[in-house]
Structure formats: structure tokens, C-alpha cells
Length: 303
Image (tube, rainbow, N blue to C red; front, top):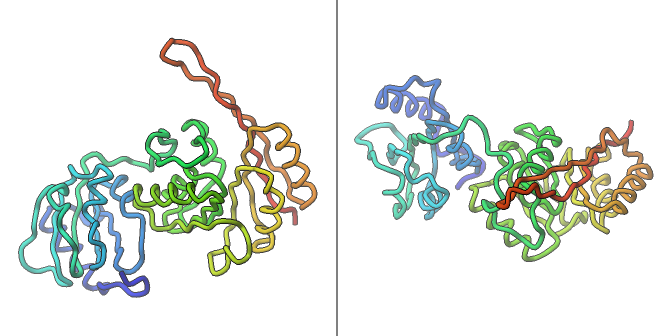
């Protein structure tokens, strides 16, 4: 794919939009448009949250339809047409019937998702993810963490040792960038699996927070950190690239909490909030089972 210039001109895109609107009988404003021939974008989350998506794409991904089917979108209806101009007949079928089709030229498709959601799936169950070496937090706790990040769709965020947080953040910050720091080789591999599984194109995986690893990447405005013995080094490195960085930090350990507060004070990071999340769930024996109760510490550098 060409990441700099769209295969389709603006007049062509408008012609295609009008073409499919007339063919389907839909009002133009009810069709979500996404051009992935110009720039890689999160197609799967877009289809998941819209009933009708008009997709402009280019040649180059032999597994395009297979990946959509593999995610669970096989029941979607698809109107498919190759070429740059809206002329000729349209192939209409289920997406599942297209899994062996390779896109070999610029193409346009209108995808109907009867099971679309009105919002992104935040707080997904852990078994939806490929899991690395660290046990993921409960989905309910993850929902609170993502809420505390206050993400916008164009944010750039650094997420350290938080695979599931990175996945859900990438869905929200769909036009931004996620820098996922994973120290463990196996965790980097499972992060790559999650990127593929959820069709994410805005996640970059790095192995540490060194200047060399972060060079040539967008500068994050916010960092989420699962605190370890590397915490102070991470804070120091991140403040070098953005002295106004905001932080949200997670820990289950009381002694680590004390160290977080010390590092915040030493680096003049004002604590805006410190909370502990307690949660219990009813198990199969009808007994409430307490889950780990993490501390979440938010802060930003004082002016």
C-alpha cells in the first residue's frame, strides 16, 4: 500500500460514494468511509462499530478477506468492485465467500455489518487476547484503567508492559499511535498476534524506552506503565523525549507504590489521583471471589 498518496482522487471517492448510495438506496450520511489505500487504518474496529462501511483499498494484502473472516465478520454482506471508476457490475455476497480472494488492484467495497456495535469494545474478556508472560488484569479493571487514560482519537500513547491496554487504546486512538514497550521476546510475539487479530495498524512495538528505541517515533503525550524495578529509568527516559508527559501507573505491590510516589516527587510529577480498585466476582460455587486490588496513580509534570 502507498502510505503517502491515495490510489483514489477526491472526485473518484465522491463518485463511488454516490454510486453505492444509489445502488443500495442508502443516504450518504449513513455510510462510513475509510480509505486504506492512502494510509493504514484500523479497519476491523471500524467495521465492528458501523453498520455500513465503504472501504477503498489497494493491492498488496493477500489475506485481506481472510483476516476479516477470521475475526468473526464472515456474516457481513459485501458489495465488491475493482477499479478506480464506479462502472460495471458489482459482486454481492457474504464476506465468508471472499476468503480466498486476493485484491490485485485498487478496489472498493461496501460492507454491511448486521451485528455492529455503537461503540468500541472496552473491557473485553481476557480470553479474546493472545496472552504473553503476564496474567492480564480483569476486564472490569481494564475498563477503569482505559477510562483513566482519557484518550482522544488522535493521541499518541506509550504503553509499557500492558498488552491488553495497548489493544483497547489503539481502538480508541484510531488516528493516533500506540508505542507498546515489551521487554520480553515472548510478549512482543503475543503483542504482534494481538495486532493481527484485531486488525490494528497504529501500534509500534519496541523492546525498551531507550533513546535508540524511541528515535523516529511520534512523541507520546501520555504513558501508561505497569511499574517494575525499571520504573525510575522509564520515567527518566520518557521525560527526556517529552518533559510535559502525563502518566498513569499501575501496581499491585505496596512497596512499589511507595517507590512510585518517591519517583513522582523526585521528578516533580504532581499526583492528580491515587486510587485502589477492589472487585469481587461470583464464582461457580456462588461464592464471591476477591480479585487482585491494584493501585492506579495518575500524574503530570508541574509547570
